[in-house]
Length: 366
View 1 (cartoon, rainbow, N blue to C red):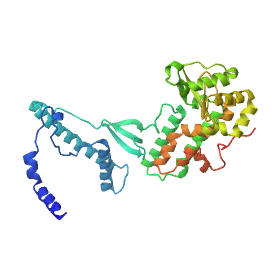
View 2: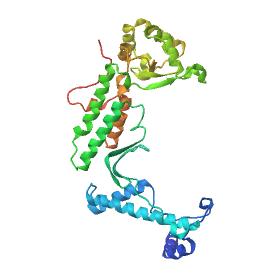
View 3: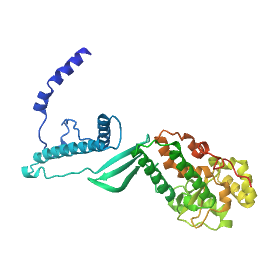
View 4: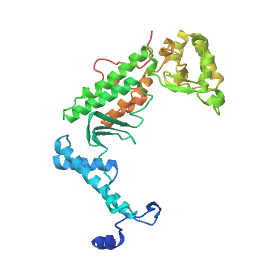
């Protein structure tokens, strides 16, 4: 070990000599094909490195992280250094490729955007970044970049998209003002979102249901193991009461109470029998004939204006709410608020509700 350290120190002492002899001051054409070439790391790195280095400089200068003028000056400093560094290296590349001397510094650059704040999640590729400056100009309004399917998904209802965006921006304003954020400012909007969705679903609002495409049988390799099975289920069990389902179409998804254990839940099956004995019997017959002992959801035609009452009675409201409120849950997690039991159909409103439980756990008795 001592000999290794001694050799390393000996080489480091002569580092400048090695650089002078080995390192080339210019680049050459077809650089990518020089497999045996070694290159030295340079300070011009990726976005994350620039962000965290700027953050470190702000803490060094200010003793804390804030949004003061000296803090923004650190970002300007990093932008200047990186821009000139990149310009220099590109000039070397141009000279190595034979570009005229007068033209090698014609390139001009500007910072793409300034992230004032980043909410970073432990999930890979999940973060929320808020920018106030883009390409050297102050933006008239905040630009919010949502990355990751947990925060950004076209399947989320418009209510969730707009409410979540307002929620994040409101907290960002409080952080910029260095205001001590109270618990209710973080938790109340999540509880309100859960209760709002519950109320809308109970009113039969189909806009809060996800959808699944059902295609004709010939377009599946194994139709009985595809979404086509739910077309057959609808045709044999429900069509005589609620009308036919046409394919292809994007059908609405109704999660059933109890998930995979719906067919084993005596209480919910008895309720279904009370609502419509014919549907109850046909459903059990269909599942028995197909060898299915699990049924987590059913698909209904997109022609409905609202969710029929029968499906509201056997629908898993909590599973619907948790699947829709994912952006809020992921955001709470990155703030350090655990929501692991949400996957077990427990809602945030169950443990953070001032007055009463807002969404029932079990089947509501008539």
